[in-house]
Length: 131
View 1: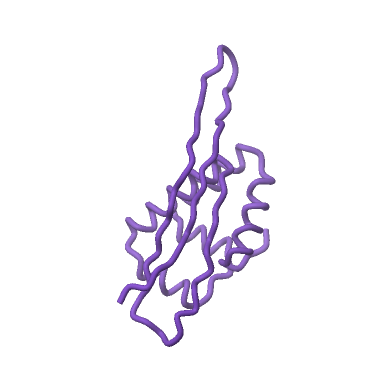
View 2 (view 1 turned 180 degrees about the horizontal axis):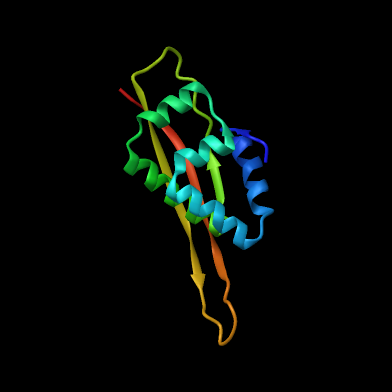
């Protein structure tokens, strides 16, 4: 699969790639995200040097938490919205990344066979300046 830019458009394109998979192959991708989110990002997106540097400096437990959240949304074929980083002018000390989660899922076990997961999850990635 091609590498996409880690932008709003690139994430939309990656979701199209992922959601073309059957459930089994999508679960493989979700497990990879949850177990090594940074590695999965490097393998699937053409990250800028700033993005790579930011990920390198992010603690492992934060990257794991992000990976699990994204993986859960992916398994449910949810919506992921990434706001583009605003132009704040001259370089600032840092920015805060927030992931908003909304939606819900339901699973009803059938009398026989395999049941389905219904509902949806929406993740919204946004940014704010921290001075």
